[in-house]
Length: 396
Image 1 (tube, helix red, strand yellow):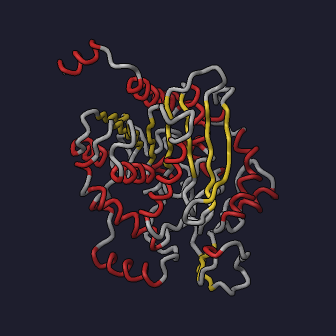
Image 2 (tube, helix red, strand yellow):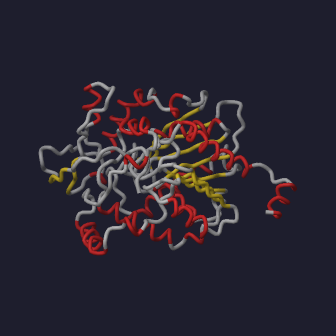
Image 3 (cartoon, helix red, strand yellow):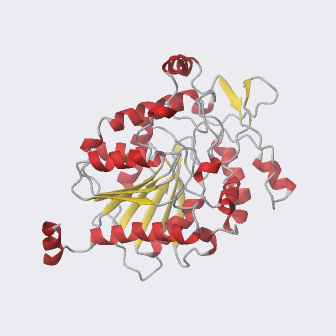
């Protein structure tokens, strides 16, 4: 259930009452006033290649957005110069915009867009849903630039409680509310004068795949296609907690929903196939990398069960991309989705030897190949359908 960027070592958490002197507290908004918090796990190993001052900033408690924004700002220059193909080979001339907007639930949401350089006609919009614990301001920056360079407007947001958006870090009290936040924001994006007459696609990675599927299932006719990368849409039985443990977790999630007690594995070794890229994940300093909060874990389980029972209702044109050696989200689950979805236009691509993070954690040539597969799929679905295409479809 992990996303790609926040996968680094997991330290033991410390559970302290809010009155404890080690707590970081600041009155910010009503939704930040909670009765009990857990202190963020302090990174035990300093980040290599940065100053003591930056390491001190990286160890801050980032439960709340104002601190996450401060930490992100301090590391933004460092991140842009990392030795990764997504940063080193980012296309030039891409127009970017960042902004905040308060949604109907009162959360201030961080939003970002990437548009083709001037003179390149806009083909369609691509709306991104990030994975668990992740943000749209790190590795996705390079991915978005590559898609935008091919003529697409790319749009992203951080969910409440993640990245630079308001909310208790890593806390999903209700997954359906999060889906509603995504629908609300992207409905506004699709209504923009420069986009409203163009095709619109949704792109979801890992947990973002579950978000994308839920968005689609609420309004099946509102998207021209869906791209799912290593989607979290079914939990394998062999990794689920036992029935006895589930009963305890269910009870605890009602008593202390924000506690970071949900069982979790250290998945860093499983997510990035390329060791040099795995080391760079620590620079995503605003990711959520503690044990999942109890309510969050229960919501993820509930959501995957709902999706599993409704995959036959998935009807949009569908591209599913998955590393064949992924042990974070099972590629067999993607095959299950592909076989059960009612979409007439559906494609499943399994990448031999690929791990979970095929968009950013593989060798350079594989990363670019996956990106090219996404763009090729998009290009084919926005071009006018010719008689020869129709004959080819009939023959196949």
